Image 1 (cartoon, one colour):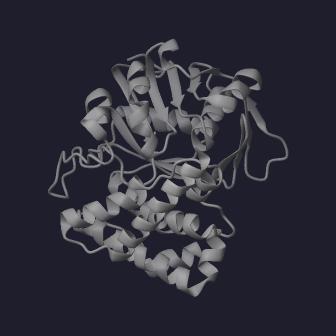
Image 2 (tube, one colour):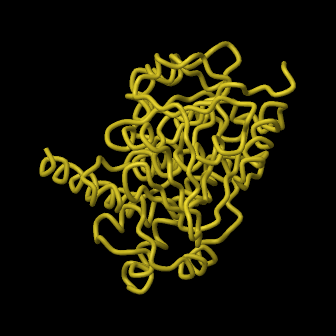
Image 3 (cartoon, helix red, strand yellow):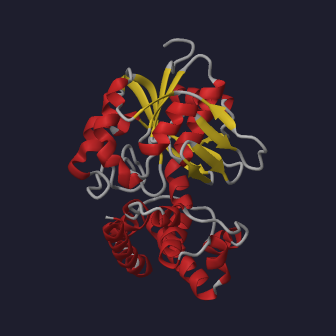
Length: 337
């Protein structure tokens, strides 16, 4: 291994989070060639004038230029791939991501919800190497990318694409990295170091599944409820009936997590108290709904219900929300089409 192990770094899906990381890496790493895979007007803007990243409370944007394409086959094999795609977008992206891999490529997947690789090298659930068809149709992710390449990533960073090539961060957030095995490998140490050098706040977890469920308590409740009501998080928490529903979903998520051997340290009551402090935030699912995009339903809600069935944990509120938001998505997509 060379002193700097990641000479070629590609961010596949340079939207809100992926684009923000791409901009920070491209502006700070002289030793690496940073590229992005994007599409449409966003791609055209990046090619023309780079990514304009507005950090929280910044008066001027960080402007970063990098190679940009919609065809991963135009890029050389990469040492590190970071995906900024949502879970329901990954299956369609598998052929492109696979083109970027060589024998030692590591893939950091920034995902909300339960990821497709969740049970790889899992020692606590009793379901090691179990593959979830709803997250990985035809096992393409498992076969062509491989869970052994993946480093899990949980993001606590509010961000939004506010125009082609322009991204705004809502807060000074942070990211949690973790190997599925729980090991602290040389790869994860090197990746954490280069992201920290780029100004991305990083911590490394020995129990990334615990972190996944902790984040999912919020995503599984606020995202679909906000889409169904078109309400901001603060508006949801100000409504007693909706706040109660949020708590019910959080309780179901926590119960499923614990049935799979995960430990969620924060109680539902503590999580609700923290949620009341977040403010008038528009969730990513509400952003997608208003933009006419397909909603990230399965990783956030559907898998909670299916894993509830796997473990014998009842999830009636989540199941109801799943039915409602699935129909909402169907109707929204028909209107767009």
